[in-house]
Image (cartoon, rainbow, N blue to C red; front, side, top):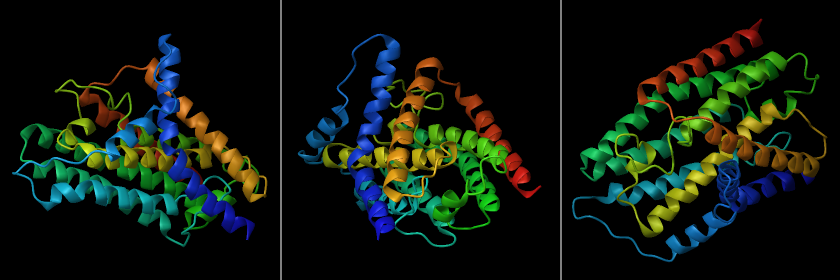
Length: 305
C-alpha cells in the first residue's frame, strides 16, 4: 500500500512541480550572471496567463495544427506514469515499458513536428527538419543507455531496473551507471532543447530549433506546449537521477524524498551547464550525439562483460 501511495504521489508531484524545475534552472542561470532573475514561480504565472487566453489559428492550418499540442501533452503524461524516481516504482510498470517510454516521447516530438509542418511555413519547416535530425541520433543513445541498465539489472521493466540497480552495492554497476548517466545527461539536454544544443530563449532565426516550431502557437495551445516541455524535463531528469543518485532506503516515501532532492540537483546542474558553456554550432551537434551513442554502446558492453 505504501509503495502504491508513493508511486501515485510521484505522479502528482510531477504534475505540480515540473514547472518549478524550469524555474530552478532559470534562477541558477541568473545567479551565475550576477542578477536577481525572474521569480522562481514565474513559469506558473506564465502558464496561468496563457491558459486564460484563447487561441488564434491561421486559415492555412488544419486540425493537425490544433491537435499537435494536445497529442504532445497526452504523450508526455503517459511518459510520466511510466518513469520511476529512484527506488519509487512507476504507476504503470510492466516488462518492456522502457520501449513504450521511448515511443510515447517520440510521439510527442512527432506531433510537434507535424503541427509545425502544417503551417506551411518554410521557417518552421527548417526547425522541424533540425529537430528530426537530432532526434534520429538521440534515440539510439537513449535506448542504448536503457538497454545497458536493463542488462545490469537483468530486468526489462524500468521500475525494477532502477529499484534493483544498486541492490548488490554500487561497485558491480559503477562503470555502467557512470556511462549511462553521462549518456542520459546529453540526451536530456538534446530532448529538452537546452544549451549547448539549443537555446530555449533565443530568437535568432538561424539558430532556433524547438522554438521555431511553436512560433505560430499562442494562448492555451502555447500553454500546453510549455507545460508539456516542463513535464518532459521532469521525465528525463527522473531517468538521470535514478542512475546518478545511488541511495535506496527501502522506504517508499524516503526514497521519494531522496529522488526529489536529486531532481532539484539535476535542475541546478542544467543551469550550471547553460551558464558555463556556449551554444554549439549546428554542425557540431551531431558529433556530440554520436559521442552519446558511443558512451551507450560502451556501457552496454561493460554490462555484458
